[in-house]
Amino acid sequence: MSAISTSSIARDRLPGLDGLRALAIVLVLAYHLFPGLAPGGFIGVDVFLVVSGYLITALLVAEHRAHGRIALGRFWGRRARRLLPALVVVVGATSAVAAMIGGDVLVGIGWQLAGVLTFSSNWWSIAQGSSYLDQTSPELFRHAWSLAVEEQFYLVWPLLVIVLLLLPLRMLRVGLPIALALASAAAMAVLAGDPAIDPAPASIAYLSTLTHGFGLLLGAGLALAAEPLGARASTTRTPAWAADLGALLAVAGLVSLASVLSIDAAATYRGGLVGATLLTAVLIACLAHPAGRAARIADAPLPGWLGERSYGLYLWHWPVLILLGAALPSVDRVGEQSWMLGLAALGITVPLAAASYRYLEQPVRTRRMDAALRGKLGWALPRRIALIVGTGLALLGLIAGAAVAVVRAPAESQAEAFIAAGQAALDAAGADELSPAVPLRVPMTERGPAPPDQAPLPGGDQIIAIGDSVMLAAAPQLQARFPGIAIDAAVSRQMRQAPEILRALARKGQLRPIMIIGLGTNGSIDAATLHEMRAILGPDRLLVLVSAQAPRGWIPGVNASLVAFADDYRDVVIADWRGAIAPRLELLARDQVHPGSAGGRIYTGAIEVALQQLVDLPAPVDYDANPELQRPR
Image 1: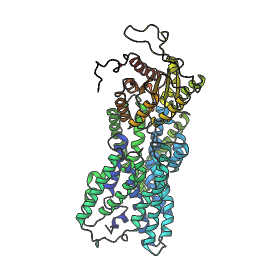
Image 2: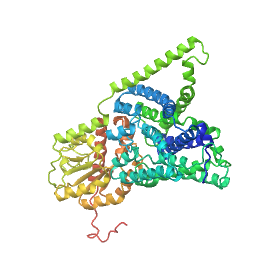
Image 3: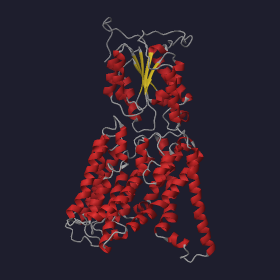
Image 4: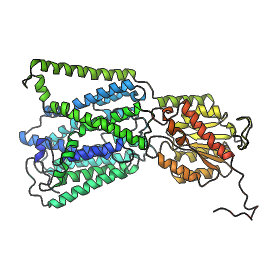
């Protein structure tokens, strides 16, 4: 596809533009609203970035060729009219609703608003340590990072285009943005590291304009390599059927990537996102074929309608989803209920985006609203006054809603408060001082007389519990139920860290007869790690594995791995925290991860049930001493 038709770009369009935007927004909506449907649907943002880089560069080059210069003020004014009105309405309206709901949804709303309104959300998020990979307690305007990246590009790139157009060779003009794109992609691959080990660098790499700007730059390079604007690419040697086939394969490739990529996988940052941008560039080239049918299909009524409203759909869908989750804390954000929440969010988002496009975005973009306010449409004076007053009152209402949200914002989230209470309980008990290992014993005073068919539970001085922030939040309840229990819990801890923790305890002689492991909330696990833990503990210790509960995609796999591992050992049991808390999600913090006091009692109860299973186990059969018994396979 050596030639790219650009005549339609002079009309602020490119062939198949609306179809491309429709594909991008469908991928994003599938990713956010319907967990598991498109685990890599975040690449829809990268499709948007390539299209934006291509379109903006093509418009700048067309203006320069038509007039011999680029009017930067007019360019930035057009971008402002395109983006700001809908953004201001979404921010003000959703902030007001968030202020009415209150609680966690308002945490950090001040810096979020500062980031959104200055188009620097990505840098604010990085500075605040907010992780894009953490989906348990997302910010109301987290999705504004991509708008920030685009606007920063719009601010700087026109200046560079003016310089590039002074270069005599097209190869040089095209080579610079392509070289910058390669540098950006390489920087992402290096900085991101392995998100499974440490997600913080990957989040920075994802949000940073410097490391996630390659899509915009690739699109810009593609525009600079195109035929002169206004000229029809009629001399292309590529047959139309080949262009159409290329477009089909590019779409199939994007859908495939959306099906297999994951936001927490190293492959995403080491080629996955780059692959999405390359496929988008191929798709743009194929759609531009003058005789191809792909562009006409892409601009059919349905994709055309979605593409035209894609900006509004993107703006509204995320805050609507977050506000619904905040208003309905008992709805499980994993599984079937999460899809119902997504359907509700979609049902609200579509009409809001349609109304925004018809009554706000188009009137402002085409200057019809400006003409009405100036009295150039022949409207009667009362109608003009009503429009002016209504617009003013709406702006005041939006500003007031945002202000109330900032005033009502709590200093910390509910989850942070629960975790802090758990840490305080551990600090008060001197949790860092573990006593030496004691022999397994079962004091009868622990629970009073046990039922005749149950053995009494062991004392807390025979138990060590190792966990993450979920166990940390439940620490006061564990201490109350099992006095003397040793708890080693930390925020963001993963299962892969458990073997080294156990080795350190073993070297100090501090392993106890019963081990409780509550990890799995913060990442996937593998069987090798579990078997390594079991080998460190040896055959004389009992092991309780706590199942994981969180609205995260890896949780079902984590729990399945725990169950499969426990099935291999008679002295390993599962404390079914997930099953116990699932009917009572309202007892968790708004992130649906961390328990408060009532949730902590359920957490402790799940462990108590598992411990009872262990102490009720019959004594193991000595097959060597009883050769007449058949050893099970």
